[in-house]
Image 1 (cartoon, rainbow, N blue to C red):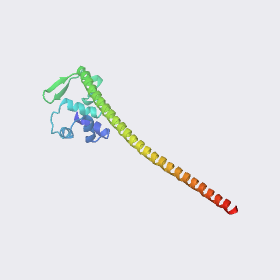
Image 2 (image 1 turned 90 degrees about the vertical axis):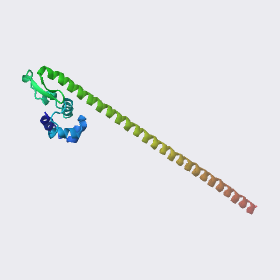
Image 3 (image 1 turned 120 degrees about the vertical axis):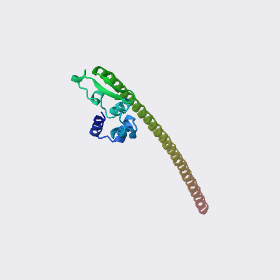
Image 4 (image 1 turned 30 degrees about the horizontal axis):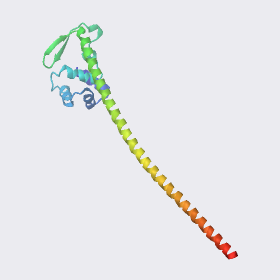
Length: 174
């Protein structure tokens, strides 16, 4: 069975690290199974690894439609070998599909959490940018007010100077 998982992993160009991350099986456990140091891995571990490479139970234990009534021996870690018939395969397949659905749900939840975190970060950055923009706009407004009053003062001084010149001209001519 591990050979089928390993072949599918190679076909999908997945690293061992990627398979272990997707399946939730520790990398050391997978390497122990792969190198024969773990003689009888649990059925759950094998199913999780198979789900990680999208290998069905039927593909995993090489059951074909014409051999569905053939008895297959599955070795569980604690209970030892027991016979599984083709009719049991559908129950195992349902369990396998539930495992896949649970993994997909967990991935969707993780994605939703990441999306919410991303949205939160974007909102915080937008608030910071808006605050900076408001601060810059206030600086521009105060500079405009200062320029307006400077121009107004220049106009008043110019008018006063013109008035003084006009008074001097009138005084000289009179």
